[in-house]
Image 1 (tube, rainbow, N blue to C red):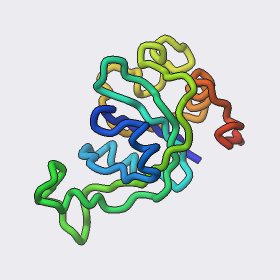
Image 2: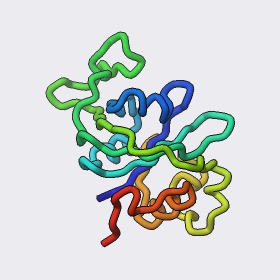
Image 3: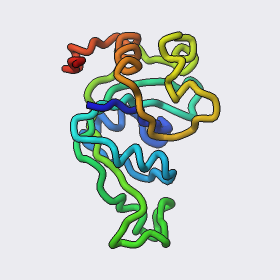
Image 4: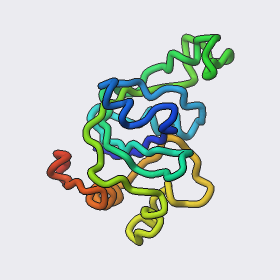
Length: 161
């Protein structure tokens, strides 16, 4: 099982919105590297849900991938801000996955707090210039963040190999 971090602006789509929706497509990603990360996701991979572009950005919850990558429908909708006239329907340029909420973090973890944790020095999120909306998270980074947020791997049904 791989682990990921998904960023969303909470005034556009928050973790609470995902909880209300139940399952939601993670669409509208228009960066090739982030798209490639989406394409690497597998069903049951766990993702931190990160609130970005807000007064206090940070990790709000944990979601689970429910459907592996498939063509992002918004690339074909001319009225969508994510429309891509150059994306051929027979070989779509953009992908999405479906995610479902697993649990809210008992303790919200701010970006500033994450930056201060030595074990997270290699986390892409805390590195300068990294603005991708989809990021891989190592097993150890996942464990550290989950525990800082008040969760155990057992509670998430994650068992290290």
